[in-house]
Length: 318
Image 1 (tube, rainbow, N blue to C red):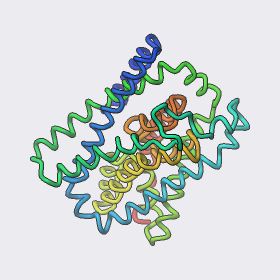
Image 2 (image 1 turned 90 degrees about the horizontal axis):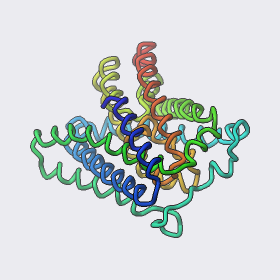
Image 3 (image 1 turned 120 degrees about the horizontal axis):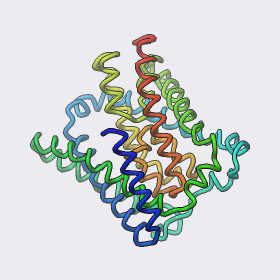
Image 4 (image 1 turned 30 degrees about the vertical axis):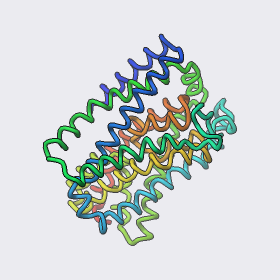
C-alpha cells in the first residue's frame, strides 16, 4: 500500500475528527479502528496458517528468527526507556507526565490492564489460524490478502478521527520537540544492537543478525530483500523475525504502556507503528502518542530501505 494513501486517510480522518470533535464522533472513530484492526489480524492469522515457508521452517529457522526478534524488541525497549531522562532535560514535557502509565479508558478494569484489547488481538488471530488449518482455497486466501490492503486506509481513517478530536495531541508533540525524531533513532540502534547480541548468543553471524533486525518489523520488505542479497534461508529468517515482531507487539503493548509508559510503548512495534500497530498504541497509551508513533514508523521504514542492503552488501554471511 502506497504510504501517501495511508497518510491521506489519516489526514482526512484527523480533519473530520477536528471539525466534529464530540463524543459520538470519537466513538465512531474507535469503532472503525477496532473493526478494521480485527479484520487485519484475522488475515494475518490466515497467512500464518497457510504460509508454507512459515510452517516448513517453524522448528528450525523459526527458532533463530524468534530469538533475533526477541533480542531486537528488548533492545529497542531498553534504549527508549533509558533515554527518557535525556529527552526530558531538553524538552518541555516532564518525565513523570511522559513516562507514566496513560489515562485508562472508561471500560478498562481497575488494575489498568485491558483484557478487551487482548481479546481483540487473540480472537481474530486465532480464528484466522483455525480457519486456515481447516482448509481454505488459495483463491480465497489471495482475495483476503488483497482486501486487507484496502482495510489499512480505513483503519488509519479511524485513527485520524480519534486523534483529530483530541486537541492536546499536536501540543504534546510540539512539546517533545526533537525527541520525536530521537525515538526512531533509539529504536533503530536498540533493534540492531539487541539482534546482534542475541545472534551472538546462539552463534548466528553478526552481519546476518544486523540485516535481519534492520527490517524493524517490515517483514514483507525484509524477506524479499534479504532473500535476494543473502540467500533464501536468511530471507526466511528475516521474514519470520520481522513477522514475529509485529505479532509480539500486540501482546506486549498493554504491559509496556502500563509499567513503562506511553513513550516506551512506541518502541516494540518498529516500522509497524505507522500502520498496523498504530491503533494499538493509541488504545493502550492514548491519542497523544499517535503522532510520535506515526513519525517513528515512517522514519524506520526509510531506515529499513537503507540499512538492510547496506549491511548485507558490506559483508554477507559475516
